[in-house]
Length: 417
Image (cartoon, helix red, strand yellow):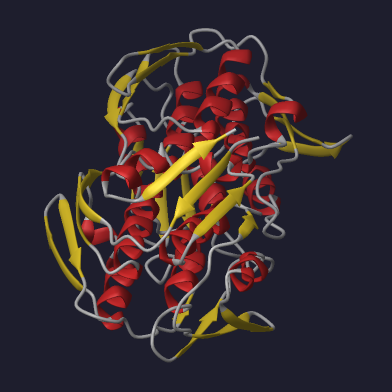
């Protein structure tokens, strides 16, 4: 099992490019199930979750080819088995995204109940409710969701809560349904918009993506297309926080500042200088940072996937910050590990009270989920001495060659087996 060994205390400096977004790539790969023609996807990040999704699609009969430019071509001319088995689904919650496309294209699907990070309950009931509204017969038995429908029918679906994967699954299913579908209380995340762009390029008729009401007019068939995945806003934010917390100065290329307003505003509030252009963001710091309180909520509010990183920053900032998590109930598991490095954090319900300390000291820590891993790497970059982050397979699910990119910015970090 790999570990990251970090010698802290070095300000990050230089330029790196942002990888394609994991949370946009996964549903876009699943969209290949909706057509018999090839779908070419560019700017695909090399991540464990992407590899798992490609293995899942290949098992269903999708022909997959890759090139040296981070591109993947998928051809689902014939789906041999509309089944997503437990051994692949258990490591990655996003596997449930095959449910909608398979039901719409094949008239049936059998998908294992998903796994993924241990950050709390993330039920799939909204996916099921939406498909049932579109006429699918759903059964849950022996740990699997089984869906059947001769052809889905357009429906008005009001989601009980904002769910990104639920919105994406139902949006994909509705593209091949007869009639119009309206999804109310839809997720507004940029990744939903990126999926809609890909589907529309394939011949779908989707309007309103990025708002809380998405309208889909079903079509008889979709065709092949080419699509470039948007940059990863969470990787972007993570590197900006790392530069700010270490007192550095960096420029990120292939970035989209307009989808990171909440994060950039908090960095400015902390005292960092942030400038940006159409496809770049630059950050530099002058002296110590101030603590900033954050409260997570669905987009466009502050993202839950950046909560842990800001907790690491706040641990060495001036003052006291309140970090409130409203999206996932178990997303403070990194707190105990940060305290091992000397952070002063107390958890009260869904709020962590973070009092800035003069410095952190390196120690051995263990990652518990994807974004917790990132916060521990950031803390290691800040801390005095050596920090060893164990179980970094979580990190590899969502960050492409993070140690290589950080090394290019001057970090003293290496991977050991």
